[in-house]
Amino acid sequence: MAIHIKNGIVIDPKNKIKAEKMDLFIKDGKIVDEKAVKKEECQVIDATNKLVVAGGVDMHAHIAGSKINTGRTMRPEEMRVVRRVADTFRAAVGRVLLTAPAIGYEYAKMGYTVSFEAAQPPIGALHTHEELDAIPMIDKAALPVFGNWHLVFKFVEEKNIEKLKAFIAWAIERTKGFGVKAVNPGGVEAWMYGKNVRSLDDQVPGFNITPREIITSLIQATEELKLPHSVHLHCNNLGVPGNYQTTIETIKLASKFSNSKRQVLHVTHVQFNSYAGSSWRDAASGAAEIAKVVNSIDNVTIDMGQPIFGHATAMTGDAPFQFTLHRLTGAKWSNKDSEVEGGAGIVPLVYLPNNPVHALQWAIGLELGLLIDSNKVVLTTDYPNGGPFTEYPYVMAMLMSRKMREKELQKVSPYVQKATGLAAIDKEKTLEELIHMTRSLPAKILGLENKGHLGIGADADVAIYDLNPLDVDTSNEFEKVYKALKTAVYTIKGGEIIVKNGELVKEVWGRTYWVDARSKVDLEAVMPDIENYFQYYSIELQNYGVEESWIRMPERIVVG
Ligand SMILES: [Zn+2]
Image (tube, rainbow, N blue to C red; front, side, top):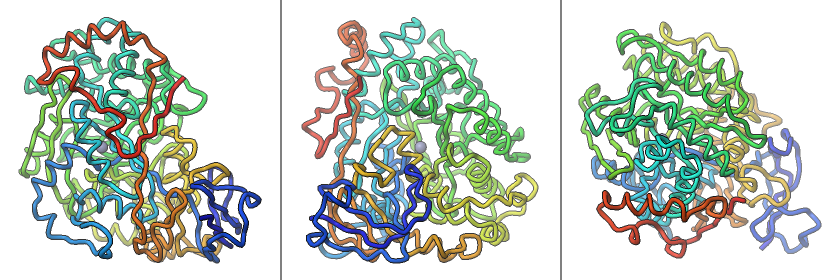
């Protein structure tokens, strides 16, 4: 069935459409030209005075795999929150750590149609994909973690970029992954000895390499392989006062590389890496300094990692950080080791407005969102680390309204006034900038050409909100903006209406993207090394990995 979206007010930053009244046409899952459809056969959606945008793209969230499952086990209280869905839909349960169906449903209700699992332990890839397959409504992908994998260390130590490239291509195919994620490079290996790395030039125990060498080698390999997405980096020293300097030093590593299409380094959830000061007693914001550097470098992008007050669960491949967090909060703690590949940790927590550290983190996230050029910063909460993705509209409204920020500042610890510059920032981002930060920008950073925009040929993933961009005053009407963006009037996924008036009306299954770069490398040259390493694994090489046919709706993106 073809769809005619009539009289909507379209914002489509990629195609330079700034709040224009226009019609859109959908056929066979794509945005098409008016001439490609017979109007009398179209289902008509009256979007008069409503905002029409591409479906949201969440480029960094934790939605599937062993971490979120361990988190669910550690928070049985979550299962008391039952979300209302019609009888035809599956059980949607959870406050922050939602069940797999609920993740798809809640994204859809908010007008989001893509979400990337940002840290897939390679040996756990099958589990990750089984769970991604249980999430309806959205397109998905997973980023396997490389920053502490012994085989990466070996090739970095040998300065053998060709073997590193071949290994990455092999690993991405085996894990049906999308790109190269690195978490605290070298630090998780140091954690196996009860330690961490503290600077880019610390030695990684057992190897003659440093975090600096791991990061630059991974960037070089990723760029030479021409993967759609750049290296996606969780920096060293996450969660440590004074860490903003390590973050700046890391960002500057990108200046040696260039790519005409996209950034060469995406630094994720930067809020957790933007602390000045020497301890939690004198911690302050380093966001302004980081913003200056990001704004001055062309080939780096970031996402916010915005904390939301209320329940959250920290879960990262950064195992030593999670131990630190457990010591700081006294909360329950879980730690995982994934053989010779890395590790992870989980700590359930609650962000409290009157806690000076939590309020500082909240303010820093907003500072990053406000001070960094909207072409370089993506809105995320690093779900569920900073809080639920369902509160993205809160962050959107906050970035657009100084008045809302002033109101919210009244509720938080006064430490924020002393330790951050948030209160003095009068910048108010526009609705168009926020649509870019949640759609066209993340799609561009991930290299997804058919996502995040509404041009002819784009996937027909569309969100319609009860908000007239020609009429709304985003500075003053922040409550209206928040409410409108929270629940879409319509969400269309791949040309099918899945949400109507904020209610789910149809369950659909999105695709799982994975990247195949094998034709760009000499796999034979690296296989003996890989085979040799499997003596240290608990499983045989032939049992390692995920076949494409095991995935519900795979979409292979071939490189080269
Ligand atoms: Zn994350």
